[in-house]
Image (cartoon, rainbow, N blue to C red; front, top):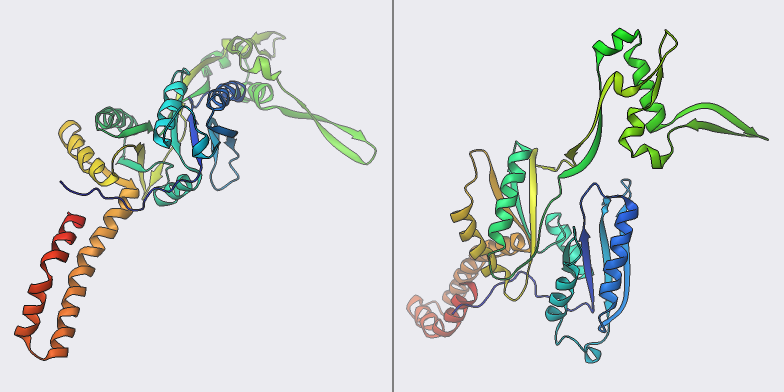
Length: 364
């Protein structure tokens, strides 16, 4: 049997970092309701000392995050006070089982420091990142689903999530120029009423002492989300009529892109996962074998593996150069010391058996 391989050993930080994913089109109110359920479930475990969550992050930060994603930090009690689990992996498995009962939610477990290290390495907050590159975003999403299905069959794969690039609901208003011409109005009239109702428009100023405040008009936010209210917005015509917006525009809500992810000048989508119960090296080797058999990418599309494995592979490749060079330098130093090549060869042959066998097991 071979020893497993990892880039860095896992450290026990005494806490858990939980990421909660929802559909991109969810509202902040619904997102917070789900977050309350997540906090209630995690707090119900006697091993948990405290739970703090954060939903979304503004676009002005270096790491923007929509309201569909929450970071939950779970502080654990000392292990000698645990009651329902013997180790952290068992506790995480039980938490995951309960959290997956919440409809429309996907979760990913890590540790606070490990989470940030993983993000610095590959840009995702998981141990393994499988990046698919190509031009067509629909094809990328199609093959990302296939990769997710295949990876789920590999022993040790947990918290498998596909980057959410679609699923955001968009309000589409397309002006019907023929109908606009029949009513004798301009496209700009339609645009103005839509801009005022949905985006808001400053129509006057309110003066209080030395201060001036803009007075804006827009739809009530509760009515803004109702399609019928938008269709029934009235537009005044030169003939003195008030016609609904639906008479001069096609209005509908359609799913659109939630984000556009690019790397090295190409579109890409990421499938991320964590590894539980085995080493990362053997997991990636098995996962690559499964993907080679089950997922055949079309021409112009390719996969790059990232995360901790990326650094591990880079380190091993360097060792394959450094170790032989070091051995040659040691050999030359012994030759220079004894000035007899045959005597140096005898020394190397005498000591090579045990160390070399151990080295083979470590590298192999």
